[in-house]
Image (cartoon, rainbow, N blue to C red; front, side):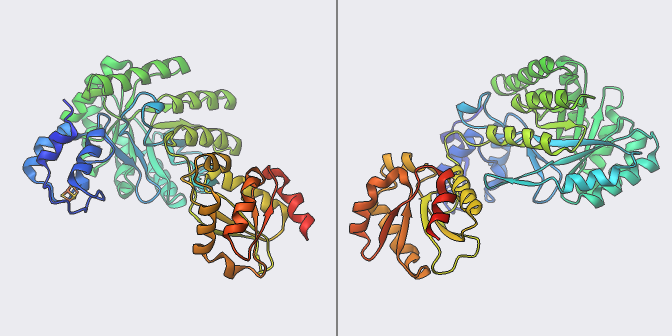
Amino acid sequence: MALTGVQIFKLLPKTNCKKCGFPTCLAFAMKLAQGGIELSACPDVSDEAKSALGEASAPPIRSFALGTGATAAKMGGENVMFRHEKKFVNPSAIAVNIKDNDANLAATAEAVAGSEIDRVGQKLRIDAISIECASGDSATYEAAAKTVAEKAPGAAIILNCRDAAVIEAAAKAIADRKPLLYAATDETAEAMAAIAKANGLPLVASAKGLDALSALTEKIKGLGVEDIVLESGAESAKEIIEHNTQIRRAALKKSFKPLGYPIINSVIRDDSILETSIASVAIAKYSSIVVISSVEKWKNLVLFSQRQNLYTDPQVPMQVEQKIYEIGEPDKKAPLMITTNFSLTYFIVSGEIENSKVPSRLAVMDCEGLSVLTAWAAGKFTAAKIANFVNESGMADMVEVKELILPGQVAILSGALEDKLEGWKITIGPREANAIPTFLKGRE
Ligand code: SF4
């Protein structure tokens, strides 16, 4: 049964040493009770407390990383059925499948390595490569695993092979990349679990239906493998929704440990549009790893955007850092504009400044991630606060003429701002960002 924050607090060292990143042990305990952090974040917790808290504080869905290093994709650790209840924590990893004897193996690995894009300030990419054992030959498969490991150094690797005799050499060869073994069935559980255990690797449990899957995860866990991923045999979009929802509900609402693991869905289809649609369903409904068939920019954009939107915190607006951004190579005569730090506002405004080709400075003020009008209405983008920001940021030293261009939507602030900013001229900029290029070019 889950413990409350206060129950957890009683078992902590109570030194408030802050090593966990929280100001007090109580704050840490509260976060642990919500499942937002793991017990291991407190380095001083006693063994006695560990054993008392270990099981109770474990997230209802086991959490571990797919791959290694900075680009490893964390999976599991989810605490809610619906995003609006709190937030979803670990975005679905997207994996591209390639056959081990495909002549394009190296090129596909390189395409995955180069798939990263920047969207609204976040780096988005294909996270993993699934190497399908089509050759049935251990040496070919091992060579393919090594090629992928070399060509895509940041990508996680999934060894998509159900034959323990074939997968073993590849698993050993790239064990330092922590590949996911995909997969063990009831018949191969012992052999696959032995390879997973010997190399410290996560293992997919694959069965038809949730009863058989629960029995299989129990069996694999009993064989000493802790990091397990579920494959339920769901194929159609309807089955994916049904199975994944039942799995999530069993783990969260019933604390049913045999299904408390991340889910993998392979959605490969001949028809790319259909495949993307089903991948989109899997991302929306709790899949931790979605396996697709190809790297295509349009497909990436659809899936990346959906995933990003689902996994942002609905209670925290996306923000960029407060600072003076230089766009182009502005000299001291370059225009100086100001806006708020809501990510979308920043990216739209900076994009339009770039479009204008007029080198400029954009002062972005911390308004807790609110857009211009909302920040103004909330009293966070007022003349007094803007004046403070201008004075403290040293903007005056960056420009020859002290002129600040205010978003047209808050033109009402210009008088008060001129009163507070001695020596500054306040100019009203466009109301809408798409008018910025014309506005800036018209000043030249
Ligand atoms: S690291 Fe442990 S002891 Fe220190 S404040 Fe955090 S919970 Fe308390």
